[in-house]
Image (cartoon, rainbow, N blue to C red; front, side):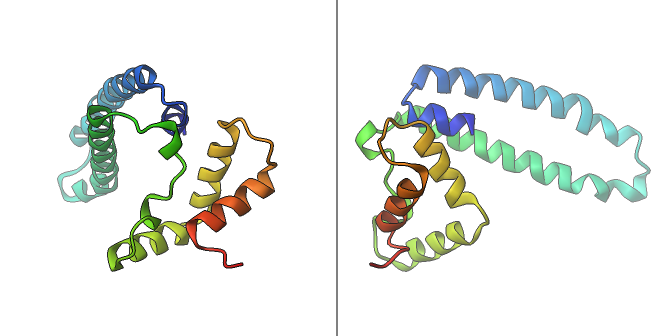
Length: 140
């Protein structure tokens, strides 16, 4: 959530500091605790660490994507609230948008974060309706 707030405020310096802090803390934590568990687990039960390793790889992918975002810069404030998956009409965008909307509370969490970081006269309910109209999920 903090990453999204820094993104919405277009605070590039804060995003770089948050990136390096999370990189160092997360890598240190995983190196010391998770990878250190291997010596205590019996050889036939090594697959118990697989979920932790998968989570670590997902976090590593997230950090890599954040690095790419920092490398290419944050978008202008006028482009922050666009729906990335709704600006093109093709099968990949449609499938991605359907997956995005199928995940519980992901859309609502994004709307709450966008609303709380924006100076607006709309209340939360109206903000949600505007985002539903912009994404094409609500037909009038």
